[in-house]
Image 1: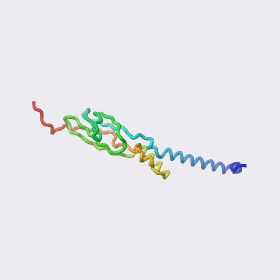
Image 2 (image 1 turned 60 degrees about the vertical axis):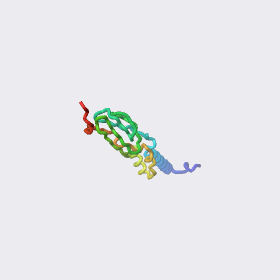
Image 3 (image 1 turned 180 degrees about the vertical axis):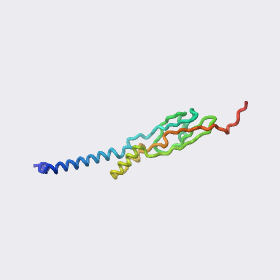
Image 4 (image 1 turned 120 degrees about the vertical axis):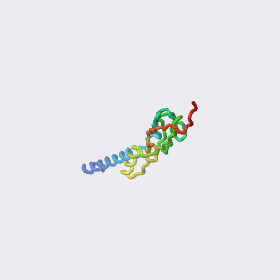
Length: 147
């Protein structure tokens, strides 16, 4: 006679319940921590200007003209310069913040007191802001053109 057959029905039910709880906790752990590992390492950055048609440099590299949607890395700060002939050049710096996926990693890691491995992945972060609206001011320092 096996051990399981000799156990009363209530003991087998309690044992099965404990196994189900442990399996649920393990599944929850894997679904709540490390999600950022599967997130992308880039995100779209939107740059708009008034007037449109301005040249955009991101970290010194030409990215295109406004209105612009450009894939940028999620990690690190970005310097965005917008310039157009006859207007003053404008610069903006983006930072990074915890993404919604990164927040899930923090919550999952806090609940299960395990290392927050997902926070080392690029998917845990996002550029802030992800949309820039820039108004270019006319350049008053331009020499007057001769008639």
